[in-house]
Length: 115
Figure 1: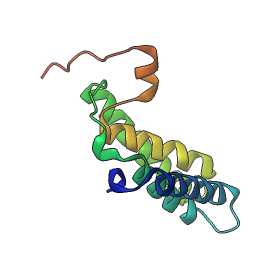
Figure 2 (figure 1 turned 180 degrees about the vertical axis):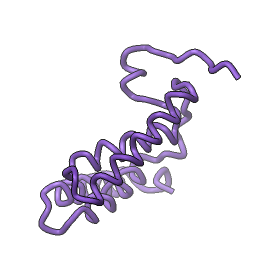
Figure 3 (figure 1 turned 90 degrees about the vertical axis):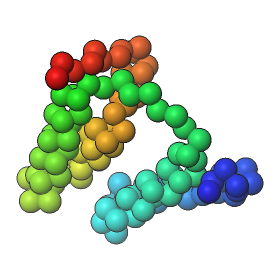
Figure 4 (figure 1 turned 45 degrees about the vertical axis):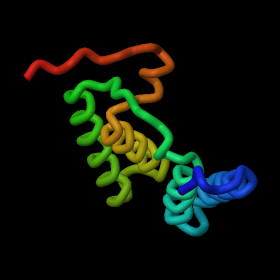
């Protein structure tokens, strides 16, 4: 969808996403604008054009999934602040995609799991 938008419209949607994330982090309206902003931001980036090569093992993905869910639970029970919620979102997103941006920067590619 976003590849069909002109560049000016895509830039507006990108900036709108950043603003909504900022409002969500600021806090007076809760975390909902941040989640909406993240969705808008990802839409503006045109995820359909990206081809991901996985660089995480299955064990790493399962660990990140459990860690993300555990952190979400702590945030929802007010044992941790909203920053932990954003960290949990990153854990869940990388577990789902099977690709870690930090691994990419470091040039790391996890070995295949032994089944």
